[in-house]
Image (tube, rainbow, N blue to C red; front, side, top):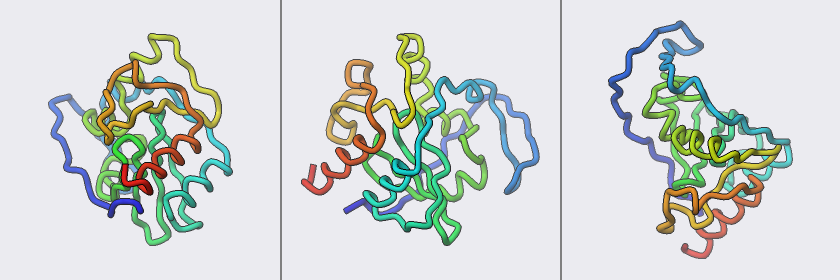
Length: 172
């Protein structure tokens, strides 16, 4: 069973900011974050499969899947959650998304949610993603896996979510 939704604490950034009007209120752009290395392509089988695996409402709307396989959803009640296969939990990220939007544009959130440093290193190593693929941790971080290139491989998104979900069923 997934862990209950929680909200991650915000991390302050020392980067200069540019304010732009956006859907909810203000969106802050930081130049380093606007250089994402990968955009993940996925189909409805993948998005529907993730909803079923993590017991999300069928009418939840998938907003984005990160290159590391984490998925952002808007729930029917207007809340936003991140299914984090990286951390092995479902997080309520409503306040952060309303404040910063998707993708996260605050440098700290961008790196926390989108693993920008890892993306840069994987891109430099020549790794690529096809549709319905993400980078996954061979041994998940929440099971003591290393945050290193040796512990990252290209994986099918839905299979990666299944493997992480099964870890919870088995009490990892």
